[in-house]
Length: 487
Ligand SMILES: Nc1ncnc2c1ncn2[C@@H]1O[C@H](COP(=O)(O)OP(=O)(O)OP(=O)(O)O)[C@@H](O)[C@H]1O
Ligand SMILES: O=P(O)(O)OC[C@H]1O[C@H](OP(=O)(O)OP(=O)(O)O)[C@H](O)[C@@H]1O
Ligand SMILES: O=C(O)c1cccnc1
Figure 1 (cartoon, rainbow, N blue to C red):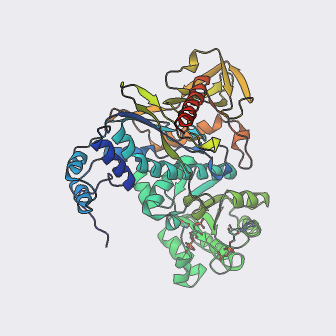
Figure 2 (figure 1 turned 90 degrees about the vertical axis):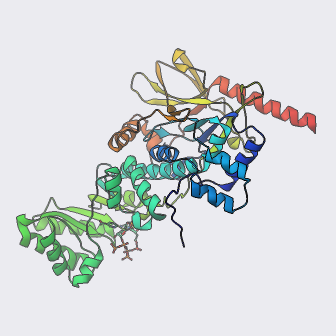
Figure 3 (figure 1 turned 60 degrees about the vertical axis):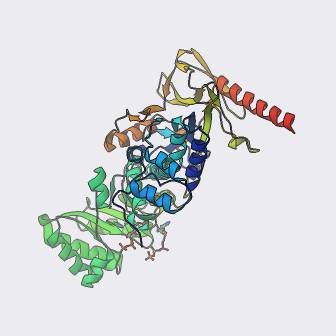
């Protein structure tokens, strides 16, 4: 049976290998060496042209609760894997690193650092698993939500996924991410309470089944609720559901707000058109048609192409589970470590696959936009000491195909990584959820349409500065030479 501990903490929400490595660092005396790690993903999800970053608020909540509690340590002791002196060391652990991150709602791209941890090696290592856990999921869902928002245009979209989500946390934080990505409301009442997300709900087939009659069920609902959306497909949408919804709406008149009807099965293009006709003919042109049933951006686009008369979309399973791509694949790589002189030395992870070779050095991501229209020209990844704002004409080139290049002038350069923690102290105030949502919306506005289309979008330029590129090439060469010498 699950054991609930009064002092349960997040410290053990990590992979065991992190603790194994930390033990080695500690026993060998390098645990306090300064290191820099960066989080990035290599491929945009859903073949989309951008991603929406989400998860920072949860990361902050995690860091603020990051300590080893008595029962955490007692558990580790019971496994006999760690020496008592190491457990005493963990007991004293206090997060003291610096975290820089893009802010929630920011539009981000593949192969650029979106979160950076700098500080004692032990701190950087301990937080890897939890931060990846949070950012991978929330960024994925916010991005999926933005794709769905982009095809419904100004229609309403409601998040219905809790029952299909991968457990409680995914439902709760997933719906927050969906809200950031452009959803209007959630069916999860606790998410309303915790985050202030607007909640909304119609009723299920059970209500109609309980009364064994559309008319009885809708009448009972209308007698107990002001706002009414009737689910009309339990028996026969066109011959029973909608006619009975209309009958009840007429009978109750001003006593209720007849908001509309929900369809949850069948050919939704055909049925919604007929439902619209029935509602209009009955004198309810403002009653809306809600639809749900395994919807996603593809089905919605297709329904719209067929002229479906749907005003509000309820989306559950395929959003909250990121059905067509269930993982983002973000990684967290060491980019620098203190050397024997106390200086940061850049590090690399090599691979035979060029895309998988990491980019050494602590970096900043600069968003380059044209002064004239505020539209994005690309992202420019530079070493931390570089400052592209001082340059008149910026040379931008593709990090793998360097012949793809351009000079950009009359531009603004905005650094995306902001200080969130400085030496363990929180220095960032999380904006309200409404502000984050609006921020995501505004950031998407500044992207060219070519990067936003849901099918085969253009590749957004994510370039390296010349220094960053040269540094990477130099380190690759040094490592190759040192291996050749040793061989
Ligand atoms: N006109 C349409 N064009 C494209 N897809 C549609 C159309 N109408 C419905 N769909 C989608 O097709 C799928 C149909 O699902 P399903 O096979 O479960 O049929 P159903 O009629 O909903 O049956 P059930 O009563 O079991 O829910 C859903 O994903 C739905 O969103
Ligand atoms: O299809 P989704 O995108 O996941 O949206 C959520 C689904 O959950 C409900 O169905 P369910 O069969 O669980 O219950 P109900 O028919 O009794 O409402 C609802 O009617 C939707 O079909
Ligand atoms: O309110 C609804 O209609 C709803 C809520 C959750 C899941 N399906 C539908």
